[in-house]
Image 1 (cartoon, rainbow, N blue to C red):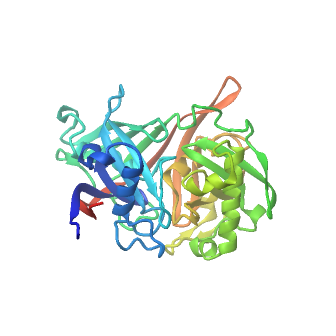
Image 2: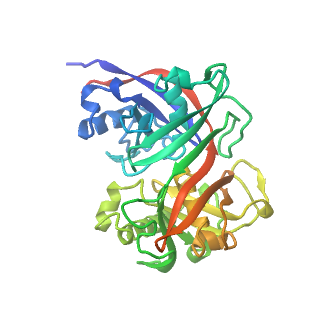
Image 3: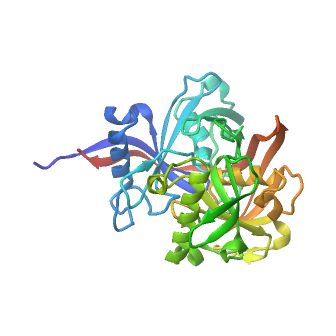
Length: 389
């Protein structure tokens, strides 16, 4: 018996240097309105995973970690918040959805989506100006504050704000990540700003392991044979290098207490991230733009879902800003050391500025908030279709 397709209301949005398929919780099929295998299966089929060809041709994904994403939005019942935001990172070639972290880039889309879809009371939306949207990030249980520009009573999407890694300018959305560090334990899981991590076939590496924005393992570029100015092809076409980074990630995840065994890393691809840093150097970005060493504080390259990211994940940018604000971390030292509340770093597509305020409380470092700007735009809205199961 040949089955027909079902239609699910959806919006396809870009946020920062990522894009994904957005759903209102109430619009999903009943079986997908609760967490579990049914929800994961529906979202994977929408994106086009698992795809052994690695192309996601039969779905909405575009075969990169930046474009294999899903978002579920609902009205928040949490005091002082407008919407709950749940993020699912869909594996491209394997059958799972990783719910272990946030997407900082798509966070820029949540405020605009909430305004456009009636989650914000009309009397709070000015004819022209700014509306503040308080978002509960359900994956990591953190608050994000989005400042959404309004023009003629509607979300302003177009503007002159340029974001390296995004071809066209758009309107700026300012984001505040409130207390982005893990409240379940120390921001530095081992209690140290620098640790020695033993990785088989690599050796002992000096690393900074931080849980702010997203769990991230930082290593010095020269310690693993890199300059820090590499572009995607230098890493993603090197299977030996990718295996090395995955080994660093897995062993670091154990030391951070995120997993109990190496085998668990295979089903937790979204976190932790691995990034390598170096003092600033001049280089040419993937878009052909010359980045002068004097215009940035340091270089950072980060891997997402097993590949070098084309720009920088928003949550990793929060981790970079947080680590840069704390004296003695590898990020801070690569940026020149000392105390700082703002850092501008070079990534494969260009540069990004992120701020973070660090304070010492009860003998431990705490990040009060991290700040950065992104942009967002609706690309398509209507329905996605998937075969009935």
